[in-house]
Length: 252
Image 1 (tube, rainbow, N blue to C red):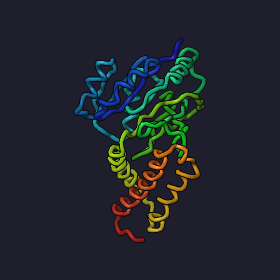
Image 2: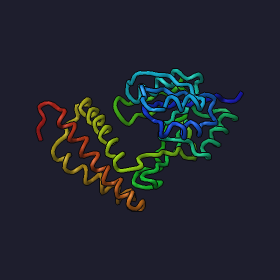
Image 3: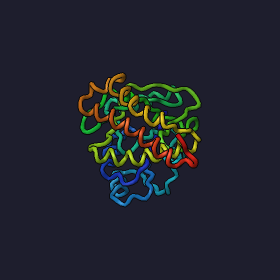
Image 4: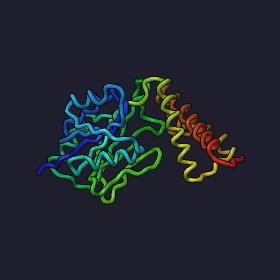
């Protein structure tokens, strides 16, 4: 019997991206969009393209994705973000799993990111493997603040073709998203009671730039690679600065 898969997508004001991701999910038997109060055309576009749209208040990234998985009609879940899509080659691999049956309880797949219009292959950005196809009876999303991931209680297989990740198309967009994510990262640091010393604040950002741009080959991605390395360093500086400001009785 062919495997049935539900695709799940969590959204908030994703009218720019939602059509692309839904249209890439032809291999799925159901597309569930869990929306958190979008005020743009996200819900309208998703519904017109045949997705089942459910409204839910925001509970955090991991929790929201677990809710979406629980609401799905099928036990096998393909979870994508709104700014992602399946490549045609990855869709073909998933079709093979549907026809032949799953040999594992979850599957990783590489994620190829587009940044400022360029596909990024270095700097630690690729292959960036993620578990996105899984049996919800044996897997769950974890991560209280940022960097949520899927934990599989069973065997994990590895697909070879790419998820396509359409990240920031402008520096303005990157700065705006970084402000949000560094706040979440700082909250995570404070929650874990991790101490941020002045030495760490001063030394970690330049080390991040060196590692991203030189050790991980970011320079091979041209001007975009340089920008990524700089923004990665700035990201760490901002999250540590915010965390220090959130911590009571902080000192160097």
